[in-house]
Length: 215
Image 1 (cartoon, rainbow, N blue to C red):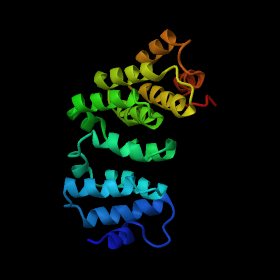
Image 2 (tube, rainbow, N blue to C red):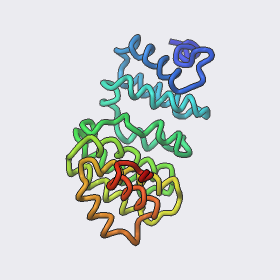
Image 3 (cartoon, helix red, strand yellow):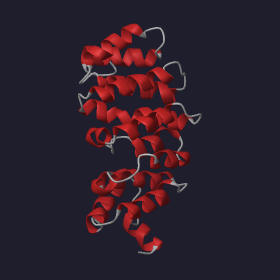
């Protein structure tokens, strides 16, 4: 398939919103369900390294619609891809919600090593990504390996002041409340003078009301 034809199918004329891209990606993935993991990797590289935000976003969308191939990808590919993303929108498009708790636990040694590496990176986008990867898995799993890793990543970054990080910390803590409520309460109490105020406020609201705003 030529690059021009590929882009025409994935980015139909007039498609300018994420729902429109999702519709195109779903159709394309169904037609190309037998694509190899290697071919998908090449396509993802092309999307994520493209300077246009919507093309980067398509990389994340394709991860959703080709789960069998996604499971075969080396987790450390994400570290390379994150060299080409900036800001919460691009980070979250690539890192949020695609990798399930089951997938992460099936290759936990590598995922743990990757997320620890990202959390200590000089690149703030990678540091946010480390926590974004865990937001959905900790919400959907009671496995203590995931919660322990989440708290350790928060420990690494809890004194950062950038909203890119403080909001990610809040996000992880709030999602941890579903399956690890007692751990969250204890962690907040032990770290009340160290955690970002926004993370404490939103997580306490979540514990009390089920919402981050407390309304």
